[in-house]
Length: 214
Image (cartoon, rainbow, N blue to C red):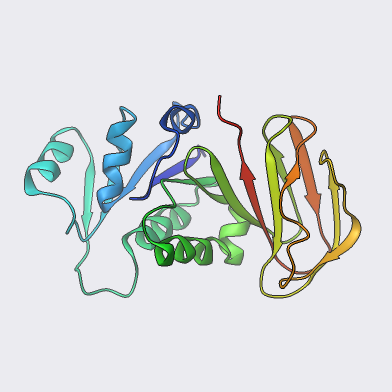
């Protein structure tokens, strides 16, 4: 099954890099006003999900006429529009899933997205949050990072100590070591190749990969 891309309503700090992340066979889903990020990249999503309180009737009509399916939810709901879009992609079975426009503007929204993608289901489905320059995702066993030599990689223990961390392709290797959630030792490592790998034996690790600007 092809990958799903969810467009959130955060910032795309480097639109050129963000556009390069989109593949021709990706399913494009927008969470409410996140559709504007898709349009900024010259794309029209196949599905729009949300309460649509941030979009005009004219915009909705335009996207509908362009072939997008509109899934409207009431404003009084427990989930954010992005959570609804993510649930939709997970229930269909898409993996991996990339959230574009994931950060910016409001700290609570950015932290909420990180909380969403820390779930076991999201980790199994390789859900990653991105703004074109910075991707973030969680590791509970092992993962691969694709980039370029010189890219910055930060590894942060999430909630509890993370044990047995071993890395390859990073300038400052970890060899079966432990990172504490109350320390910054894992911040600002550097990729030495186009691929880096991270493995661990217990805990949950937040990986933040900052790409170099072209």
